[in-house]
Amino acid sequence: MLFIVTRLLTLDSIFTLASLLTLDSIPSSPALPKTLEDSVLHQIQNGQALIVNARRRNGVVLCKPYHTEFAGPGSLIGGSLDTDCEKLIAVGKLSILNPTSGDDYHRACLIRRQWVILMYKMTSHEDPLDRARLLLNQFDNYFSEADMVNLSTEILSQLVGVFPSTFLESRHLLNSPDS
Image (cartoon, rainbow, N blue to C red; front, side, top):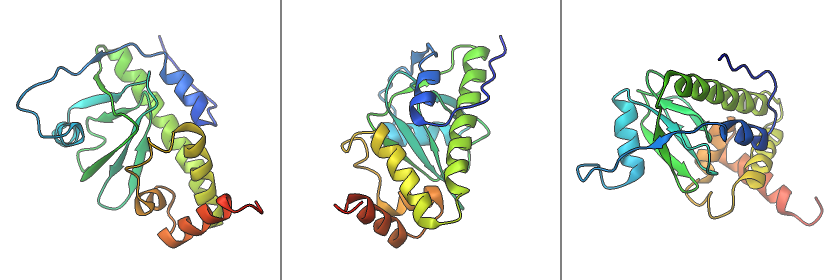
């Protein structure tokens, strides 16, 4: 079955699409690195394809040599896409699954594409304060404060291509009582 999505504009709509996936979780192994993030990073650096669990509000920030990407619920990570990933940061309580079929893999690729499109739409705004504000609004509406505890200002600013100081200014403007 060919699954084509032509329009997804919010994180909630991507989450709804991602919840269509049914997958099995990765079996645990005593030989895995000390944290789930380290384990997942090692696996994707070795080319293994994994999927961010679509049934949870979680995601990963993939820090690469020259840019940073966000992959939300239902997204494919790893494979040939992310072998250059240097650091992986969990957003929320990370849950990673193995694709169980070609259809699961294909759907996860399409969902990853939708996350890339969403981030592209945020970064296409000329004003850096707008880019930072859009990311803050999306993430604040989708993730809890506890889910975002691992995300530094530097990482968030890299997602939308602004300076950390610009991101802090945008956060201040959003939190001020006048806005």
